[in-house]
Length: 460
Image (cartoon, rainbow, N blue to C red):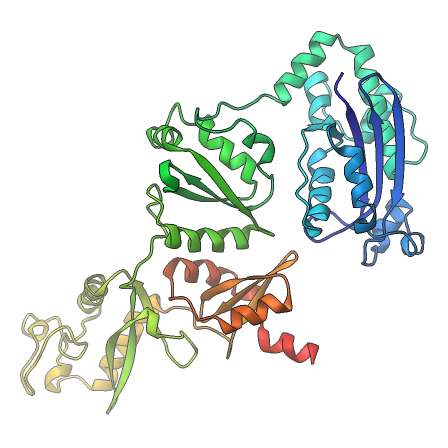
């Protein structure tokens, strides 16, 4: 039997990237069957919410003099190294420990077994597989429910119980099913499966000579990467990607927003051969309106890279190039009876009608038959459906996500920070070029933005 570690944690909440560990319980079982138990309270460095205090019985007073995780990290790592990490709803406990180690610059990896999934596999006739259900179903002995060591002991008891209730063949079949190794491309090291994190982020596939093949985003990097190989038999694209693949890199993020922003930035930076969307576009442009006096507004095509998209400049549409922009404006002229001369689609001679007026489409603003103000109102109405969201702040803004914050200015993604030093560095760096895909993404999250000036005032 391989060495085992039955693990349970108590925490300040349910989010591994934001909440912290308050207690660790580990039951170690060696290959010869000998058992050791360890329990440790941890000072989370933050307040434990009243609900959590009531649920676990661990109060702020109890952890006030307890060591921080940094002080017990080495001991925790020593007790887990080389062992199968077994926990009930293992994603929760494993994710919290990975994040605690990550804050210390330590990469923690371990083979994991979830006893919720194991119970479902061995006892499919039952619908509920939470720890309370297992206690009742299998007669497990709980001394202090919702304390770390007591719950780790319950998981160990369940492990012992299944070896009485089920044959060794049934247990081996269940473990093989849960730990089945996916079929990997022949050029990849099989150890990559254990290294891939189950956190949000982006991943990059590389081919021969480190040629970037594909950049993808994921809420769960491990699950998403392995899904590529599960589909390679049915998709020509996935098959070609798998055959070319030589190496995988990844960047973990605090959440989905960070993954989306990093994906858009990396696609434009690396230009991977298999990504068709999110590509760099140097000709991106938009329509603005120039006031020429006497009630006349004229559309002006501006390069997106030159604008700040602030409240003082209304912008209409984002186009790949000038040709696409002109085609859209021409379609609006047709549908809203606009004058080709006044909107700049046709050069005209003063006093002479535009072509649209000759075919009875233009209402004659070009020759004084329609007031300019009326034509201008129709032009603004025609463009209204294309109007972009103006940048709502006088300067940069932040989107907070877990322990990270994304720095944005004029819909441009400047980078992601974890400290004031990183913030200062990004503010001193030059602004990247405006990007349509980043704008579309960020416009959805405008309500989550906090102006940087407001943050600085609070700290002053």
